[in-house]
Image (cartoon, rainbow, N blue to C red; front, side):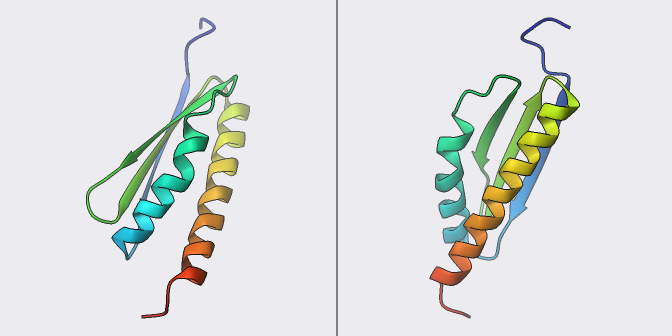
Length: 89
Protein backbone atom coordinates (compact mmCIF):
# COMPACT_ATOMS: atom_id res chain seq x y z
CA UNK A 1 0.00 0.00 0.00
CA UNK A 2 1.38 3.38 -0.92
CA UNK A 3 1.19 6.48 1.27
CA UNK A 4 -1.92 7.86 -0.48
CA UNK A 5 -4.05 4.68 -0.48
CA UNK A 6 -7.07 4.23 1.73
CA UNK A 7 -7.69 0.60 2.68
CA UNK A 8 -10.81 1.17 4.79
CA UNK A 9 -14.11 2.75 3.76
CA UNK A 10 -17.42 3.31 5.57
CA UNK A 11 -20.60 5.09 4.56
CA UNK A 12 -23.16 6.35 7.05
CA UNK A 13 -26.54 7.45 5.72
CA UNK A 14 -28.58 9.64 8.03
CA UNK A 15 -32.31 9.98 7.52
CA UNK A 16 -34.13 12.48 9.73
CA UNK A 17 -37.80 13.49 9.99
CA UNK A 18 -37.39 17.10 8.91
CA UNK A 19 -35.51 18.27 5.77
CA UNK A 20 -34.52 21.44 7.68
CA UNK A 21 -32.64 19.28 10.17
CA UNK A 22 -30.86 17.51 7.30
CA UNK A 23 -29.81 20.93 5.96
CA UNK A 24 -28.54 22.00 9.39
CA UNK A 25 -26.71 18.72 9.89
CA UNK A 26 -25.06 19.00 6.47
CA UNK A 27 -23.99 22.60 7.09
CA UNK A 28 -22.66 21.84 10.57
CA UNK A 29 -20.54 18.87 9.41
CA UNK A 30 -19.28 20.36 6.14
CA UNK A 31 -16.38 22.38 7.66
CA UNK A 32 -15.16 19.27 9.49
CA UNK A 33 -15.38 17.08 6.38
CA UNK A 34 -13.25 19.54 4.42
CA UNK A 35 -10.41 19.51 6.99
CA UNK A 36 -7.26 17.62 6.15
CA UNK A 37 -6.57 14.71 8.49
CA UNK A 38 -3.34 12.70 8.11
CA UNK A 39 -4.74 9.14 7.84
CA UNK A 40 -8.41 9.66 6.93
CA UNK A 41 -10.68 11.73 4.75
CA UNK A 42 -14.41 12.37 4.78
CA UNK A 43 -16.88 13.30 2.08
CA UNK A 44 -20.29 14.68 2.91
CA UNK A 45 -23.24 14.67 0.54
CA UNK A 46 -26.72 16.11 1.00
CA UNK A 47 -29.14 13.50 -0.30
CA UNK A 48 -32.70 13.89 -1.47
CA UNK A 49 -35.31 14.84 1.10
CA UNK A 50 -34.22 14.44 4.70
CA UNK A 51 -30.95 12.51 4.13
CA UNK A 52 -27.26 13.21 4.57
CA UNK A 53 -24.54 10.75 3.56
CA UNK A 54 -21.08 10.65 5.11
CA UNK A 55 -18.31 8.55 3.56
CA UNK A 56 -15.06 8.06 5.43
CA UNK A 57 -11.93 6.55 3.95
CA UNK A 58 -8.98 5.66 6.17
CA UNK A 59 -5.53 4.17 5.79
CA UNK A 60 -5.88 1.78 8.74
CA UNK A 61 -8.41 0.47 11.25
CA UNK A 62 -7.28 2.83 14.00
CA UNK A 63 -7.82 5.87 11.79
CA UNK A 64 -11.23 4.53 10.74
CA UNK A 65 -12.28 3.97 14.36
CA UNK A 66 -11.15 7.44 15.37
CA UNK A 67 -12.88 9.12 12.40
CA UNK A 68 -16.16 7.23 12.92
CA UNK A 69 -16.20 7.98 16.65
CA UNK A 70 -15.52 11.65 15.99
CA UNK A 71 -18.17 12.07 13.29
CA UNK A 72 -20.80 10.06 15.19
CA UNK A 73 -20.18 12.28 18.21
CA UNK A 74 -20.62 15.44 16.11
CA UNK A 75 -23.78 13.99 14.54
CA UNK A 76 -25.21 13.18 17.97
CA UNK A 77 -24.44 16.68 19.24
CA UNK A 78 -25.93 18.32 16.12
CA UNK A 79 -29.13 16.28 16.33
CA UNK A 80 -29.51 16.98 20.06
CA UNK A 81 -29.11 20.70 19.35
CA UNK A 82 -31.70 20.55 16.56
CA UNK A 83 -34.15 18.71 18.85
CA UNK A 84 -33.77 21.47 21.42
CA UNK A 85 -34.13 24.25 18.84
CA UNK A 86 -37.23 22.88 17.09
CA UNK A 87 -40.63 22.84 18.75
CA UNK A 88 -42.15 19.43 19.41
CA UNK A 89 -44.58 18.24 16.79
